[in-house]
Structure formats: C-alpha cells, structure tokens
Image 1 (cartoon, helix red, strand yellow):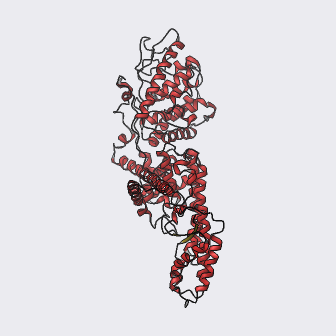
Image 2 (cartoon, helix red, strand yellow):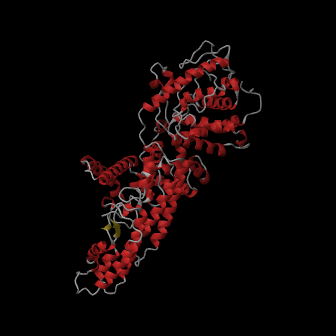
Image 3 (tube, one colour):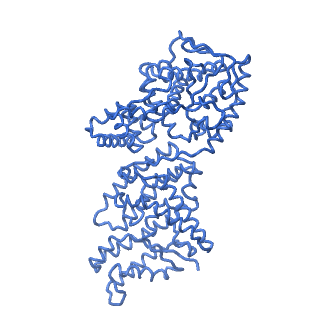
Length: 640
C-alpha cells in the first residue's frame, strides 16, 4: 500500500516539489519529444527512489538535473524505431496510441517569432555543439558534469559550448555576451495531462517501484484524477511483473526491446502510450476512488481478483505473449533514418562546414561498398579469374560519392600527401567508422565515443606541433612519413578500442593494414604516389629505380653525367636497406604491402631523397622539384 500522506516527506516527493517543472523543461529541450521527455523524467525519479540517500537535503535541483540529463542522453543514444501500439495490434484501443494532438516542444515554440528564431538557431547547431550548449547554458551543468553526461573530456565540452554560443550569437545577430540569455525564451509545452498530473504519476511510479511485493505493484497503478497512467505501456507491464515477484528479468522475450538496456547494453524503451485505467484495488492519490472490479483493460489484463497473485500470474502470461508480438513488430518495422551529422567534431578540422554538413551515413555506405568491391577484386586477382564488370561499376559509383566530401575538404584539412590525406585524417576516419558501425548494428559505446574523442583531440595537438617543426629544410617525403606514422598510431589505437565483433566492420582482421585494401589505413596516402619496384632480386629492381630517378635529378643517363656515380651509390644504399628481410610475394599482391613494410620503404626513401638533395652538383630546378616530391619507392620481391 502507499505510504500514509501524513508521514514524513519522502526524498522523491521533496525532489518532485522543486524539480518537476525544470526537469520537464530540460528533458523536452534535450530530447525534442514530449513522450520521451516524460519517460526520461520518470527514469530520473526512479533513480531518486532507488537512491534516496543521494538526494541532497537542501536544494536537490543541482543533483537532479544531472540525473535527468544522464537519462535523456541515455535515451538519445539508444533510440530505436518506435512502433505505435495501435499499429502493432489492429484490435488495440485508440487510447493506446500517442495522441497526435499532443503539442511537441517544437509546436509550442512556433507560437512566437522570437521563440521560433531561437529554436531554429539552436536546431541548426551541429549536434555536439548543441548538446554542449543545452547542458551548460540551459541545464546549467558544470563543464565537468556535462563532460560526464556526454562521455567526453571537459575541455571538449568547453570548446563545443564556446563554438556553439559564438554560432548562436552570429545567427541571431546578438552580442556574444547576450546570446545565452535568449535560451531562456524557449517555450516548452506542458505534459499532455498537465504538470500536476504528470508529477503525481512520476512520484507514484517511483515509490511504487521502490517498494516490494504485490502491494507495491498495486500501489504503483492508481487511476490519477480519472486520467490514464502516463508511462511506457510495455515498461509499465514489466515493472508490474517484477513487483509481483514473477521471474521475467533476462528472459528472451524482452531482448531487442531495450527494456533492460542498462543490463544488456542495447535497445531503448518504446515511446510512451497512454494506458487505460487498470482496475486493481489500490489506495488512491488525492482521494481518487478505486475503479470497478469488473473492468478489463485493452490488453486483456484481469480486473481485481480474490487472489491478486493468481491474477498477476495470468497477466504475466498475456504480457509475455504481448511482448513477443511487439518484438516482431519492432524487428519488421521501418528503420529510423540515421542522423546525418558527424559523431565527432574535434579540433580545427571538426569546425569545417564540410565535416558538419556531410551526410555521414551515406558516406559510410559508399565506403563500405568501395571496401567490399576492393576485397572482391583482390580475391579474383588471387584466383586469377576475371573481375565482373559490375564490381568495377559499383566501385567507381561509390568512389564518386565519397569524392563529394573530398572536394569540399581539399586544402582545408591539413596534409602533406598528394592524395587521400583528407580521408586518412582522424576527423574523417572516426566519423566514417562510427557511422559504419551504427549501420551494421554494432555502434560505438559511450565509453568508446569518449576514447575516440580523446584520441582525436590528442592527435590534433600532436599533429599541430609536428607541422610547426616542418621548416624549409624538411623535404616533403619526410613530412609524408611523419604524417603516416602519426596516423598509423592513431588508427592502431582505434582498432584496439573496438570489440571483436566490431573489428570486421572496419576490415577483416587478416587484411588490416594492407595497402590498397584497408581503406582506414594511412597507406591510402601513398598508394598513388609510391612506385612499386618488383623483381626477383635487388639487382632486377636497380635499373627500374634508376630509370625513375635520373630525370628527377636532371641526368640524361649517359657517361657525360658527372653525378651518375653518386646517384648509383645512393641507389645501392637504398636497395641494401629497403630489401633487407623482404619476403617474396605473388605478382598479384605486389601492391598489397603492409603498413610496416610501407614505413620501412618510406624511411629508406627519405634517406635516398635527402642524400640526393645534398649533392652539390644537383641543379636548382630539379632540387626544388625533388624537395617537393612525395614519392616513396617500395621494393617487392616477386615469386618466380
């Protein structure tokens, strides 16, 4: 039974008295959906009920707003396609579907031009910046608390919030110091049945689920002022089963619905749908009398029985069947369109419009198609069979899709490479990988997102320091080597953060780091500017390398070239170093060197170029061209 109203105030009630309205506003602003906002606030009150000692004795709002933000962002991360209950069962009562007349926050914001302008400006922010601005300037969380909610570094939140406020000020035409004040004008619709009714529901559900036994189950389900329970229908049903002591947790019937997302790590609760009155005998809030014991709700739940536990057991059987039906409906229902915005916006590159406005799901799909086509082509090469024309067409079609992004980032994302420096930059690789994993149903966890973000920020800082050392004495070939090494360390760190079932989404582990196949590997930077020197021996490679180098150093290739002996010596030195420890490979695999082999060839190429640049007989024009030449020379021993 419910606690007597004359007993001392429960921490949940004290929390609700001061926090219900701001919690509702905050959840609505963060989620943009009144039904999800209702559930997020409900979950926050359940946290307070489970941890009453955590509710501060004074003003609970600074603590409670962090809880609400956590619950809202948990819901955003786990969003799945919602299926209206009326659609799932044609015999369902119309009361079970969300009321389309219920005003959403965006509907209410349209009530004034100023509110609309503010709303549009906030919505136009890149998602990471919008989240930071809302948490810091609407929820008034500290930067550290907001960082904890988002799972990113504190300085990342500070930077995102700063950029977001600057963008708001610019778009609203306001001074920077007054831009955040406009957020107070965001108008939020009241809960569908009013704030007072919603608050009573939040309190009762929290306290009811915090109790135990059949009494707790019945106490959590009163008819509030003649209104229906306003909690998620399936979520309410499972709460009832758990309170009745019936073993349902962890059952296969719930998997995929996300009802126990904290335990399983996947899924999210369906949207809330209004419940018809439930006729279990219970104490009432606010003097509302119990309903008739003859009623049966739209799911066929039994009315009051002489044996409440027996009635709940029968309800359990019906609900188990109902959950199974809902699982099937969710599995077969339409997929929600993926968000187009980036997951990551770290560093200067993350501020580019090309990054923020890119359709990352579409780019990820194209990248997956390109990778699949390349693997298929390599398999045909291994087997010595002809590659179907359709494979080449698919490859080219999707390469062109990816180039739409490249065209917008050329000369804007810093790189020393002549090709693919933009695609191998962490801001591109992390967003492509996050979208690809999401499409494959293996999304990054909040912890992985935080680590990716941390690594990205660290890369940007280190890459900036590295570029600062590139003065007029550092040839381009060394700059490319420095960049490849740094990006290689970054990509290895990302790989090590992935689970075993996520790694194959990136690449078959046996193919990781293989040039021309692993599209996330930094060797992508050099595959178009590396000369593969194939031969059964170093002696066979030597004339090929000399042929490539003579015109680059201005030699005609005859006995009159005074510098020819020095070139010969440099080539011999290169081959002695670069071919050491090489293993022979089939001719079809000549261009599929590994990252480690590429770096070894790059180191030898740097030494070769720097040796040639020191030659006093090298003329100014070829010296300048050689200084800016990005080419690497990759020796490959070919099987006879």
